[in-house]
Length: 115
Ligand SMILES: [Zn+2]
Image (cartoon, rainbow, N blue to C red; front, side, top):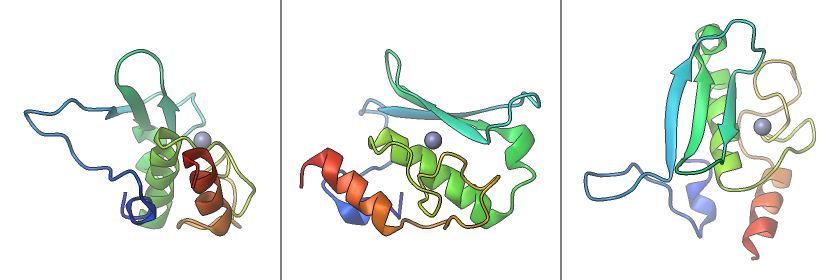
């Protein structure tokens, strides 16, 4: 979240005993699923699910990219061009993408947030 929080207006932080979680993060291990992680905004708290089968094989910058990407979905930006961290395949397939937010990611975030 250190990538997204400086953009404001949303400050994402861990929940406490007295707050309700808006996003839950959990692991699963289906080797047949090619995704390193995914975001689901169905009923209740949104979910970021990380595929431990693939994440265990990622280096730290790749893991960083996957988490930045999936938290990006929780803030509403959709998928972006190849260079963006919101590229449709974070960390796994695209050697051109950055592990950090790019101008497309920031513009998309600001556009969906209306500022
Ligand atoms: Zn995505």
